[in-house]
Length: 427
Ligand code: ATP
Ligand code: MG
Image (cartoon, rainbow, N blue to C red; front, side, top):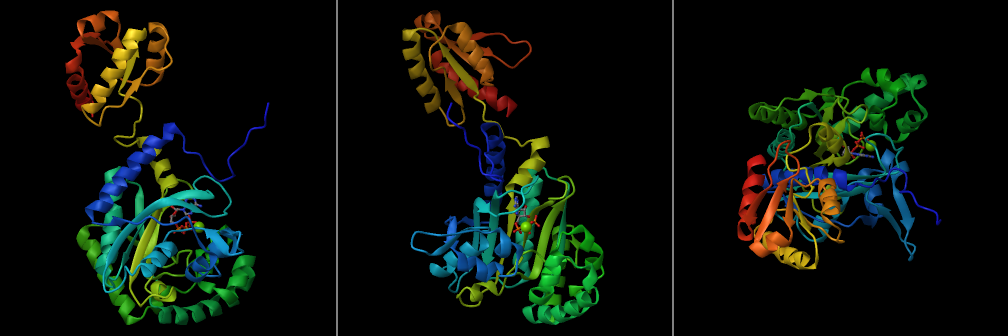
């Protein structure tokens, strides 16, 4: 036997039994994004390496050790996107979408990071993200957060809390950085290797360390919130006021710094305790300096991204309405004449409307074999075309999932209406 292959570690197949839940999640997210008038943007999976280095930051986990970087055949360094914001900003600048206008955009797709695979953390994972440009005030921050809160409601997700922080302006962060270096220098002995190195290169990153032994020294660090400039303070207070008005509860977490360098002002994460240690399902914030940093004119930006594997894991227990891809009906036809009639009937039923998932028996077989397939398919109903039915212009319908169920016979032209009523009743 020829050797078989396995998927790359940390890169998952999403199998048919799971894909219906994914689709239902994606449909709900699309609906919610549309309700706020966000428009989809589709971006390449590959960008120049420099784009990510310049936006995410040289001294971050992602750029230092998680990127899938390779030289293409011309020797140019390219990278599989580890996140969506950099490519989105690049595209908007390139196509002039930020010129004296606002944008509300969203994207969906796979991201790639060379992380240690574990539950909720993969090397290829999916994100849905949203980005808004050209609006500097806290109103758009509140809008994006409201959008995510609405999505959780629509998905029936309850065990999530919103964590909120402000990173302030870059000047405020520079002043805070000095305080932080002074503090961590006095506690050098408690730092892990990564953090000791970052003390020199990117001390704010130390606050983002997930290292268990580092949590005390992080908790006792000076708070960024005490170093906010007046403008950032006003922005942060106004955002909290808007969230209060919208009835969205939040916890202020002064240690929340996020793993990417481009953030400023508002940052937030939605966190759950039902997923174990990978509990952040959605994260984002403002990045007012990024557009200029990537060569555009100064423009405010804010965005978030959510991890779909983590959301699917949360929804797996409760399910989602519509997360079902089994056929509604399985069409059984025995014999040549019946098969020809069945083909015509199947197409007629599909003409009648887009909602019916009809699977036709292919590959022949007697009644017994075809019934067995109908049952395995998960279909609610078997539609049966035998010689009698063809002669009479009828179809027999047998419910397959009800405990007590009578087979009925209907004229062929009434089957579509009957099925749609039966499916509606249980929808
Ligand atoms: P974490 O702290 O969990 O590493 P992050 O801050 O690196 O997350 P972001 O870059 O902000 O994450 O990505 C937004 C969301 O994407 C995360 O909140 C999470 O839900 C999801 N995500 C990030 N990395 C992964 C991964 N390797 N596997 C699965 N989902 C991920
Ligand atoms: Mg990470």
